[in-house]
Image (cartoon, rainbow, N blue to C red; front, side, top):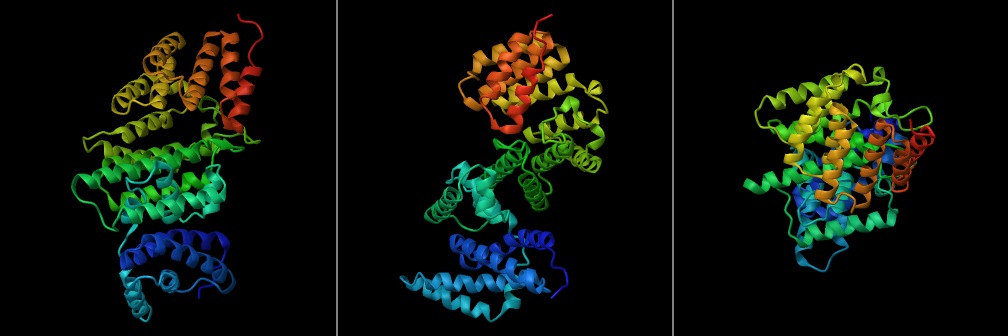
Amino acid sequence: MTAESGSPEIEDLLRSAAPQVLGALTRRFGRFDIAEDAVQEALLIASRQWHADGVPDEPRSWLIRIGYRRMVDLLRSEQARQRRERELGAAELAMSEPARAATAADGDDSLQLLLLCCHPTLSPDSQLALTLRAVGGLTTAEIAHAYGATEATMASRISRAKQQLRQAGARFELPAGDDHGQRVAIVMRVLYLIFNEGYTATAGDRLARVELTREAIRLTRMLRRRLPDDAEVAGLLALMLLNESRSAARTGPAGELVPLADQDRSRWDRELITEGTEILDRAWAGGTVGPYQLQAAVSSVHAQADTPEQTDWPQIASLYLWLERATPTAPVRLSRVVAVAQAFGPDRGLALLARLESEHQLLDDRLVRQRVLAVRAHLHERRGATAEASADYLAASELTDNTAERDYLHSRAANLPQLEE
């Protein structure tokens, strides 16, 4: 046993080891649903025992050994079929050779796990939950808290997802050909959504949930190690790092939202900016540019400006135009509106917003409508139309469940001049 037994170190160790242990058990038995339960129980046992006795010299082998024993117990409880009895016998033999089991785990199964958790038969919500639980090592309670759900609801969602994988005959192996590319694209989308939920939480009293942004970055680093030549994976990691570099400056002393233009840029993390920029430059040099690289390029332009006034808004507007052609989504369109207004004035921005509202029915979705109203309020404020700005700020505030964001919108409305100039 080592002497290190501090809580943060142990939790980090368990979280990083979880996918390796799960991969070893799933690869051995082909039963992801049971293996995931066995790993979670092994992690709980380790968390208690290691805090009391210290971390073992070979923590992964220790976890694999405990996980194998739990697999045996769980398989025994299913004694209805002879095949499971054969699996039990094989597991008992494997338990007598923990060194061989540890060697089997030396292969990095992280990509297979990510692909399995992001199986196309699962709903996006199930993909998110299963990825955070199985690969991220978060507890069901942690995932439920992050997404504003009850623990029982999240447990049920994860359980259904595992059963769906079993019914679909999902295999613990790397897909081939076009299916591989499609599945990696789903993995990137899931990691992107995890990061975004952490960066600006949809509900709660905090603007951000750092546990989710950090986990998304960790998993994306893992994905890039397995796919070092994939430019879009690199672009996704660069995007996360560049956005995360601003995290310390995004809120004030009381947790209030601080918009980009008002942030203290000396608080931006220059190491993350340097790393993200270098990753993006290498990916960009490959010649194939995708949506994540374009978004990272926007963040890079912001990071290069020492003051808000130095921001190259025409370049950002151009990048968003290309991004809209690649991914014509409401958030991208609204971001282009803001960039156009910053580059060419609020009237141009309002005209573009009105056209996009009409062409793409942006007001039909509640969340999109909230963003539209917030953007429109900002543009009215810049024009000096304070009555219109106040009305839109207040209307937008009623459509968000994030307390920090709601307070910010209220304060913008309250601080407007009472009379228009």
